Image (cartoon, rainbow, N blue to C red; front, top):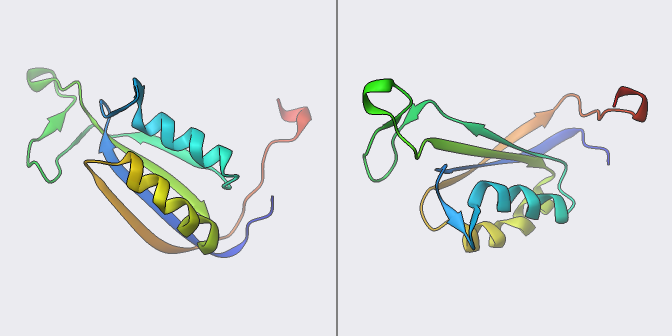
Length: 115
């Protein structure tokens, strides 16, 4: 797949412990994005944060949290991202979903020799 120039980035902010049918929501999002043929998806685990509930979640020892913030980031062309949004409506019951215009400068995968 080639991806260059103008694109759309969707970022989904959820909790690490958010579950969809006994599976982490972030994992379900990544697997659905892969199945949908999107260019790629990455999950980033936060070390501290809060959301609409105003509860602070942190990795600091005195207030160790088991539900840290997680961000799932997916970049592809606008049409493909917008077609994927209904799946996020189904999966994300609590959290934040944002869209940003972005510009892809380089998108290159590993070759067989690299693995």
